[in-house]
Structures are given as C-alpha cells and as structure tokens.
Length: 83
Image (cartoon, rainbow, N blue to C red; front, side, top):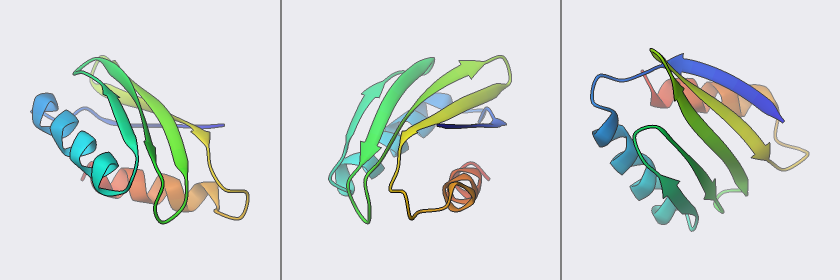
C-alpha cells in the first residue's frame, strides 16, 4: 500500500465527477462523494484505491496495483491529475 497527499481542489464536486468518469472509461468502478470514496481502474492495468479529504488535502491510498508497476509511476500520475 502507498499513500499520497495532494492539495484539495477548489471545486471538489467537479473533481469527483471527473474521477468517476475516468474510472468508468477505464473499465473500473467509483464510489464516493466530496469527502471520501474508493475507485478502481482496469486499463491499462488494475489499480484500486481509496481517498479521503483531510482539511486542505486529499489523502489517496493505493490498495492494489500490479507488482511490475512502480509506485512512483502511480504517484506521478495522481499528482499530475490534481495539477
């Protein structure tokens, strides 16, 4: 498991909608709201995790990933999404 923190976006509702759309587009699932939730994607590889808003940050925990996929790659993708 890996945990990352990113700044909370000003429009968390729009961010949640984008996350939901991305999960569905990539064969995954999304369940959550502006405070917390869980997600998974199937393509290009299965990655699953959870998120929770903590003040001005979002804490994201990756609960499942392929062994061969480096955690640093996932962290980079997460941080790029929230830029």
